[in-house]
Image 1 (cartoon, rainbow, N blue to C red):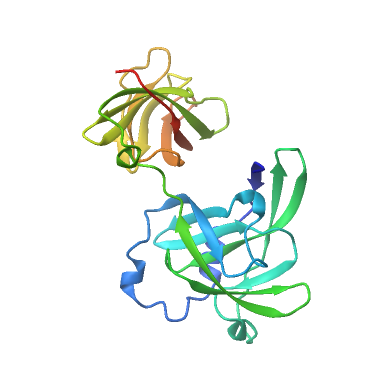
Image 2 (image 1 turned 180 degrees about the horizontal axis):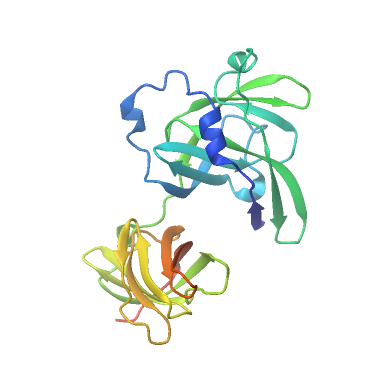
Length: 268
């Protein structure tokens, strides 16, 4: 499968304030599965081969949650979809209907080929259930579609059937300016069905990390700030914040860590 890099110029807050509420979205129980604020990898599923995520994205987009509202950004195969509407086509045609306008997403494949395609920020009323999205293409005709959004879930300790002990592991790191990074080799400890990782930064200027809202302080700064943080799941991007004192004032910076299950090697 081709590897893709996506550059997105999405105005999420503008979408949140501009789009209408979904009709019939009054069941409070449907909102119970809204995750905590943050960004998540998620699958975008549709009812048609004519409306789908760019094939290089492997069916996925980015779900952003802010103040209990969910927005799914997806990159489409081309620029042939002109607008989307969060609801039915008949409502999209009415005067005053607020249409979703495209962003330009630059997708770069592993072979070096670069293409500009349309992307959209789609309001999501709930996860794991179908909802209505209408689209209009370059021919000027509206079409109804059913779509759903499902979070990409990592693999847990229990699913991997990991025994208590110590493991060598590898991780993927992203975020920040690139000046500081986390070593791609780490030590994972499994105890009573839960995993934690000892990670080391390239800099000794990180004085705390935030993981799932919890604050963690370094256990050592010799040779780089060292932290022991929980690993809720493997093979999924975990959002973390690192606070660095390397600048004139401390800065919290967002990063992602992905602990690779295939790299686990029990050493103790």
